[in-house]
Length: 306
Image 1 (tube, helix red, strand yellow):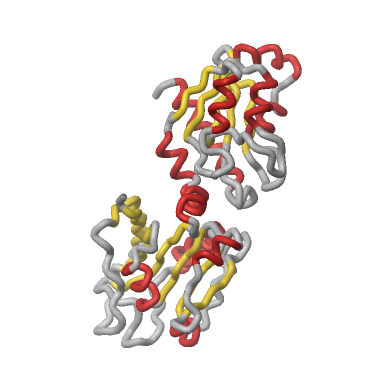
Image 2 (spheres, rainbow, N blue to C red; image 1 turned 90 degrees about the horizontal axis):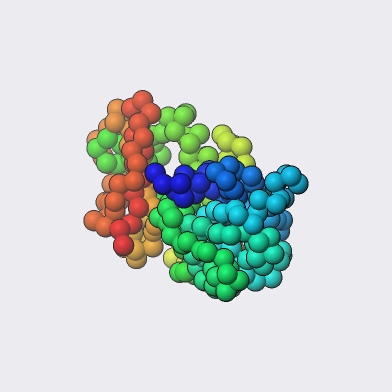
């Protein structure tokens, strides 16, 4: 691992501190290093408040401020170059006189898109771009998808028996364990909205909240053929991520249209039924991300292959 990668990993760790409150802004971490020593750190805590770079500079002790002229700032996302709720971070970096800036990835947001990097270089700062780029982009995949595709990041989620059914002869069937149910509620707390179809809503009356986890419940959506999903409307309301929980017809409609970014499939290896509603088929362009085993329940995450 190079020095640049080491400090960029620290940026990614810091950035996660903004998972709940930075939205709809991206999660960003920043580290300032001088003479082989970290002299400042920060992350974007809350939308409308200081960005990661601002907080990192604010954490520098007065006795360390003379070191800024030979310091390197590491930041997981390109510094902003426009006036939003806060002034441009690129201007702040220039005013602080740091020698070098290392950027994890460029910002896809239309108001930035390379302008922050260009502003730093025009000021004579040595800028390196693309350190741990894949990890930095993955961290903010919801943000990037939202701005690039003008729709939320979509996670399709279902639980199935060992022999591939999501219910028992059309009747609701407990498949998750208490622990994996808690994990599902943790996921809900991390996403902006959750959707089911009319049949699931009428048959199971799901609450779709986070009663088994701490945090905010996602916005609850129910769709059918008379009330189809309007992605443009979700985009207009700053909904950056969407969980689709089914049933099978709703899930398959998303799969058929290619409207998904991740799949979360929980399989209860100790449970079989004689028949019922078949679980959706995993698409051929799905890559396994992780497999987590909790007793007889296995959760497999997939991402879409480009």
